[in-house]
Length: 97
Image 1: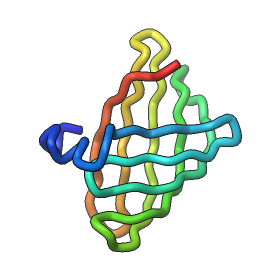
Image 2: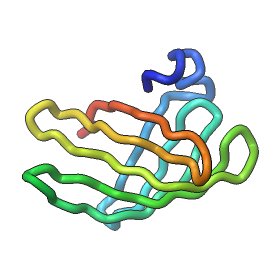
Image 3: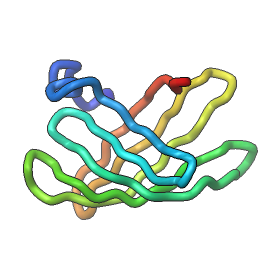
Image 4: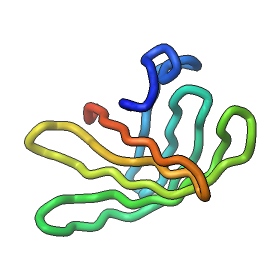
């Protein structure tokens, strides 16, 4: 997450984003966490997971949208988490097994 220092990103444990087979999941970075639900869309040969989320940001209720682009070649996930009427944060993660 280029917008934050590593100390913040991992302040409450390892930052992560997880999507299960039912297209729901969770994420956590810094003092932000949430549950998400979405769908996979294939466009121009790229598989993208678009989602809505709700949770908390520094102990205040928060919600928004986001997306992840899955790259099989690089085994990476790139995306954005957007707060409703607020900030947008980019992220890049390694795909886990």
